[in-house]
Image 1 (tube, rainbow, N blue to C red):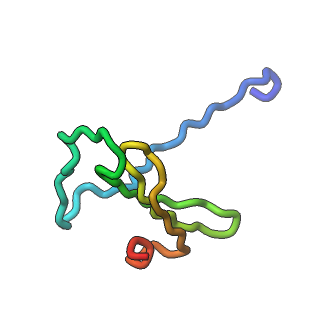
Image 2: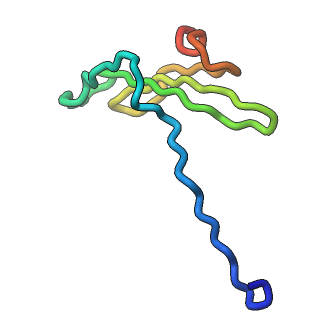
Length: 86
């Protein structure tokens, strides 16, 4: 393969990072049928991680659903309740 310049294409395995089969309470999507047509009508939140060269940090972000602008955010080294209550 090397002599003929053929490359081996490795396929990445899909890794599920969310466990949807749990015993915890789930909450309904209250905005499913809502048409958001003005600012500050609805805010949405998300948590994600950012990989740094030596560690991970977690970002909690609050977005305005209409304009998609960031209303507030908090960055922390640990993912716990302090991340979302600050």
